[in-house]
Image 1 (cartoon, rainbow, N blue to C red):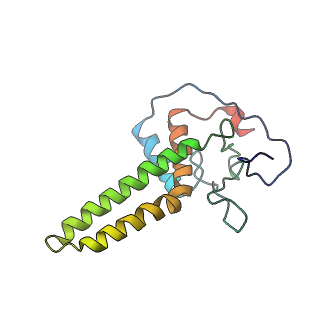
Image 2 (cartoon, helix red, strand yellow; image 1 turned 120 degrees about the horizontal axis):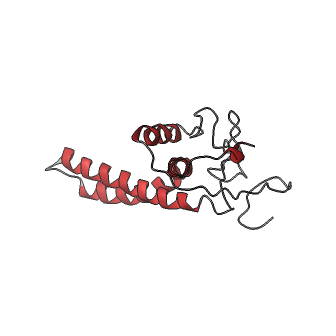
Length: 156
């Protein structure tokens, strides 16, 4: 088992070489996929859970191999498929922080507790990306499905 392979199974992995053409999504499809992802459900069918439940010894945000409902394969390409989730995680965590920081300043103006905002902001920027990472993985999968629709071989 390599250092980046967190699979607990010694069984050989099925090939994940799905490469599909990019498609221009409709707004409805985009919203449907993102809503399903925020619920941590399969972006394709909305039924099965994408994430395995956490327990000691299992990586935070570990993903099932396939959807229990539609049999969709979650890892669509190589072992580094979810590397894009780190970008989604960083962007969404920073956006959530910035919006909440500005909102707090507006609501508390003119008596803004700057010390609390400074220390709370630092703590939020450390904790938010860690806590948000499982959601970011599912969002990455959903965004990939929006622009690269699933192919029949991904359900076998």
